[in-house]
Image (tube, rainbow, N blue to C red):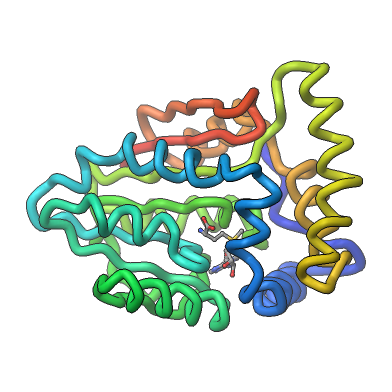
Length: 246
Ligand SMILES: C[S@@+](CC[C@H](N)C(=O)[O-])C[C@H]1O[C@@H](n2cnc3c(N)ncnc32)[C@H](O)[C@@H]1O
C-alpha cells in the first residue's frame, strides 16, 4: 500500500494539500518550462517523448479520446497533438495559470486548444469515456493517490490505458546519493533563484522523496484494478513510466 497522497510541509489534510499545490503551481507557472529544462538538463523532453512513443498505438486508434491529466503547460499534450492520428486529445489541470501557459503554447504551435480546468480527483467526465489518460509529473502531487487511480479507471473505457510518467527512486546507490545531493541542495537553490521562491522548489525534492518507488506504484495500480501493469525506468530510475489497462 502506498502513502495516501502528497503532504506539503506544514500543511494538514487533503483539501489543504490540494489548495497548496494549486497555489504553488500558480506561482511558478511562468517559469515552469524553463526550470524544467534547466534542472533536468533537458532530459524532461526525452522522458515525455518516450512516454508518448509508448502510447502511440492508442493515439492511432480511429476516433480515440485521450486526456492529458494534470497537463500543466501542455508539453505532453502538444507532443501527442503533433503525433496524433485521428485521436481527439484534451488537457485538464486545476491550476489556471498553468493552463493559460498551455493555451498560449497551443496557439503558438497552431494546435487546437481543448483545455479544461478540473480536479483530477473529480473529473467532469462520464464513466467509460476515454481510450487513454496520460499524466506526466502530476500524479505525485495528488492529495489522494488511490482516489486518483480510481478516478482514472472510472473514466477509461474497458481496454483503455493509463500512462503515468513520474519521478521515482534511483536504483543504483551511487547515482541515488548523487541525485539526492543534487535534488536537495542544487535544485531548490537554482529553482529558488529563477522562480523567486526557494520554498516552492524545496517541495519538489521532498515530494519526490516521499513518493513510492516504481514497484510500489505498480502494485497500487494493480490493487486499484488496472491489469497488465508494467513500468519502465529511465535515467537510472530517477523517472519511471507506468502503463496499466482497464
Ligand atoms: C509538475 S506539473 C506537470 C505538468 C505537465 N504534465 C508536465 O509534464 O510538465 C504538475 C501539474 O499537476 C497539476 N495538478 C496537481 N494536482 C492536481 C489535481 N488534483 N487536479 C488537477 N491538476 C493537478 C498542477 O496544477 C500542475 O500543473
